[in-house]
Image (cartoon, rainbow, N blue to C red; front, top):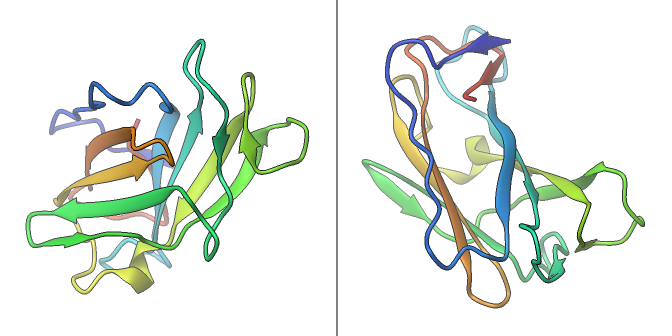
Length: 150
């Protein structure tokens, strides 16, 4: 795993109405192999902030949480995604206090223009109550099979 925080500064932000979810830990990019110059998957974990209400994280196609992607040349709404409990909880799809869910967004098949090197991108997660959690990252100049964007 290569840490891409060397060089370009990485910014993270959340909108003011993101009290429903918070980003926990690092954001990872996964490429098919070192020979490709495009990202296949964005992986990150979410949890509830202190005092946050449970969030229904039923995955697609029946999902109520919507994930969107934006970079300088495109904006894609309602991306497919997968979810699994990262810190064990009670085994259901409700994200509840003390639980952390790992979300995987397969952007390689969903984007018209692949996410490549040196590309700034934003991921937005909209919960059923309309709150939005956003984070921004920059893909590194050289793509490795797995990259920690910290």
